[in-house]
Length: 453
Image 1 (cartoon, helix red, strand yellow):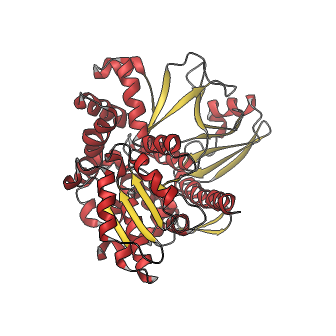
Image 2 (cartoon, rainbow, N blue to C red; image 1 turned 180 degrees about the vertical axis):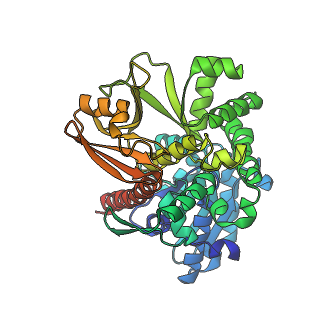
Image 3 (cartoon, rainbow, N blue to C red; image 1 turned 90 degrees about the horizontal axis):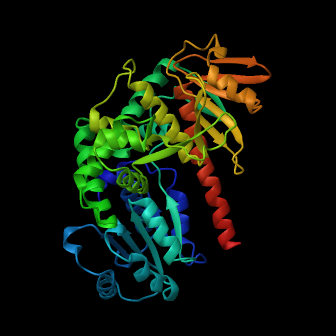
């Protein structure tokens, strides 16, 4: 066991994953999903360390790194047979951990009989091409697999794992005490540039060369290996060029026509590649709605966000808070907190140039329930009515409350019966991130109760 790994504080999701693994009545394998380097392997190692501390015999624990070169070409069936000889039957549960399982074809078909016929086995598999894995586990293993998505670090997790001085703290549910906005903004700038990946956030060595960590260890492995293996992509350079273009334009509106002209790749191919990049959790599309919050029937434009703003640093270098690009990274970071909270997000644009809203949240019936305009500036605090698109949207949809981010100031104003609250982007990021973690844990408790009740 890697002692350096175990020195890292476990993420908040360790307890729910442990409960899924250890609960005998579930009779399901756990599928731990998420992008590369968000801490799936670290979480598995923490689980193994906990098992050993609780007295489980090490011979009853098997960890397999499935993308190891020595395992290429070996079937999962034969691997499991070898495991049987190394870890023979006996009293009590046995624990199998298969890391980066997507590198093996039809993994779910091989694991399904084990789940069905071996109640003594506790199985956890992990993989980076999250959407593809989720599709496979849902279609081929109905009732046999439980998916658990591990997202990049939220801002609140980042501060907790780094044990930063408490510039902000949650006094009780959704009530915060802000002690030092200057310090919090420094921490937020650091998070925007480096914070989504635990190793990049916590290791000075890794942070000294983020380009190597992000590009070589994350982007290249996904673009050059994972996606070509999963989807049979032949022209890897096309895929890489498109991703680089999308990453550089994170938080901006694009279209298939525009992307085709700028990349030289056909529109149909671009559409497929974007779906693949979403499956690997590198990007996320957000679709446009009109002033009533309705999707356009023939909409060609959409926004693309990196799922983790630290990817931008790895590709193009860190940005200072006064650089023009930093505003897009702030929007990317705030989007990521809300997206991982499970919010249904679109953006609104209609009519004139001033008629747009950065993020619109909708109910399950697609009715607008919230609006957020993202600024990295304090210039609108005293004149929120200058946020014309936001004002028009909340008036049209009769929203009682809307939000706008600032750089360092708070503001609140009633405009035509609606309350517009302006909070620093760092405070909003902390709030959204804390809510995302809390919501995920609450959803998990409800899910487990449903399984075991």
